[in-house]
Length: 443
Image (spheres, rainbow, N blue to C red):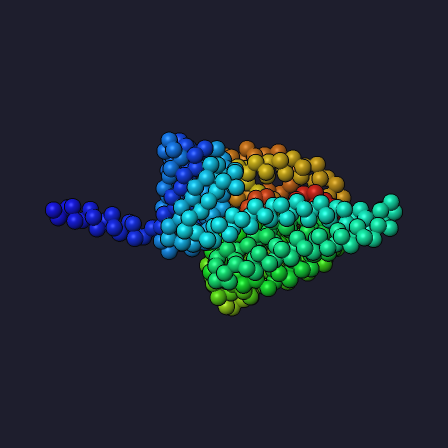
């Protein structure tokens, strides 16, 4: 009797800590069905089951979860769902047949499903009218058709107003009412860049007006796409690079100001932004982000992120590079010439390819008063000697790996890394490739 009561208590506990999505999707009978949610940049796996022979299934998700989820089926169909009520019921034939889907006990999903279908049609219609609008405005064959041009303009306005009116009609406190405008902005960003550049200032201002601390962002699944999409829009705004950097820095400052009371999230956003800038070679944006975060006294940075960022504050162009004790008898400042300091390793496949290019550049660079100083972060003497036995440049290694003092002083987090210095060890440029270094040296 004791064990029976304990079992009942455990069952009740599990039930009260979860909400349920039940459904019947006839054409997904026998298929695996899963439900996922979001936690900012992370995807949460809530539950997985197999639909029975009639397509019935049941999936649980946490009781305290309020946000968006994704229902996925074995045939790679998916449906975005608002997980905002305790129990949701879904009936239909197939996820790819939205007209068949009916929700019970979920006004949010009924509204969202209706809007998702309508938005697709709105988008197609607006694209068609936009094409005709340009045609009738610019082509002499049609430019005198004033009545048609007015009709085209009116229809575009009507569609946009109907779209806005539907959103305005939703319950102001509902998650879906909050969610739709942000999702819409993300979906429209590519077309804004390609065909509607006049809307770029509006999209920029929307981003900079956002409160990224709003709790709804956590479970929206939009956070990463919204930030990355915004910087993609800035990258492609058709302005000179200096203007692009200026706009990126303004948006970066908005994120920092907005999130500086949320250390954990700011660290995550900062790390993702930094990696994105580095990957796309936006080094001035990386430098602004780094210096701004490091100088911000309102937030605590994680050690790994701070180390990445410090490379831009302490190793920025114009600073004097730290001294390097190359061996017992030689240090970096002994080379009274310009020099390319290279950090590499025998186990690094990218370094191996780069070293082949270095051999091609080495003689030409010597004629321009540039020496190569190679610092290896190897730990294996045999591997080091084998890898660098035929290199014509100065190569040094203390076999301490990432703990070598030079790697720490220069904030090296990956190989190969390059620094072009003058005869006084002043940092001239931080090349991101040997081609970049060669172009700078030749210039």
